[in-house]
Image 1 (cartoon, rainbow, N blue to C red):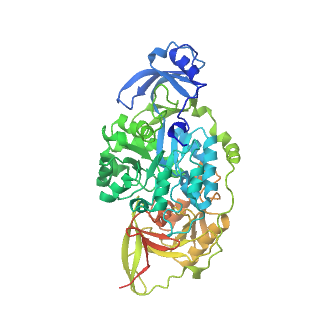
Image 2 (tube, rainbow, N blue to C red):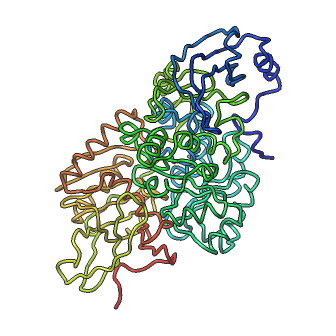
Image 3 (cartoon, rainbow, N blue to C red):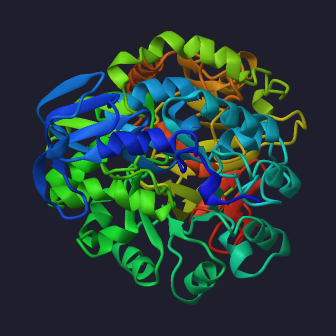
Length: 587
């Protein structure tokens, strides 16, 4: 029987506990003693000098009374500030394009000691084979990686073609794994609200663990119904009033700041001493470029303090204690006796200037994570099969045959994953709006179905095409372009190389990042991926793209559970009504 108490990090074994108690009492030598530090107390908000006594992976004592305790190793903190390790409350590692081990190397030194991920991207492509790889990876990592049970494969049954199923029986088979905290984001909120028996069966199967939500713009009676089913949180809140209502009704507010979906500015005014108990932070989808140039959870803390006037202790509380309490992680989230020694040492609190990080009592700077990536990757047995099973396309596969009249067009909202639904006229030669481009969502799992065709506004592309094998959440091929020939060429480039991102113009590749693991993840280092992204940015900007992250933005144009209009491989979906609509709007 699964129980949170049996999950990773939750227990000190009965064999180990007597030794740790002896160290806490002062009757046994400490493994590590950190002196000359100032603790930021994320509960009271105080800052005071202290010493931290560590035994094995755990903090056995906090206080100046340990200054005279013998220790195998003593570290002078040189006046550094100390906080608990940071917790990312919801993310998809696949969106970083890095393997879990490369992700660990990139984010653990930035203070992210715990990540709660949903691998539904790779699970949509490979099913249990992809999900189980993440569990094997978690077992090999220093970072605390929790793997929530992907609940919606596909996100909206009947609206898209997915690479694999993930049945309830398969989900239950993983439930007792120590890295599984509960059910991942339940995106099919209509299924919950209207009591779909298959959806409720998943909720019921995991209702003794955590139940993560996903409910953009959900309000009123429908929100009440969603919460009644036991859903605990939402990371998809996009308006202030929506966030306030969710807090008022007891929902955990996970405030997101990813590479595209940026909600920190909107929701920060809701954060205060009272509400902080119910607020936490997440990155959701963040790529190596942003991680390298801005940071991870450390960046969100810095933004809260410096741009949104959130008190220092409250900002750090959201990233530590509040998140740990929300997920029932009783030995994480504080620098206190009995907690895992996941600690961040900082030179400056306001700037989140990190001096060093400890994970389980070990200094991250001494772990040489980069030296073990290939060994861990091999041991984890990653799924390296080619998932790009589509036959090559020809230009005629992307023929629109436009006629005079009105068309349903997706309008991109910069820095949001919601879209607008436009009705745009066509006079036989030109659209009534500028910057309207052709878009196709192309099934890639061997069924060779006709492409879903759409129109999109807001990218700015002036020539050529861009294409991606990352298209949430079923990850069919997405391509946007000015002409069918370049669109077909871009799609075929990704089919040939196993997936990735590509920019083409006049039948030539301008930039390409290959993603051979499920068409989602790279085998390269974070630095190499970042370099590839920089080349993509140069290429697409040269062709007129105005968005900072067009590939991430494009990936969400396929997700039929995010308002308002989306394009799957089966056609245009009106998300407000959860029904297909035609591209041409009949009079």
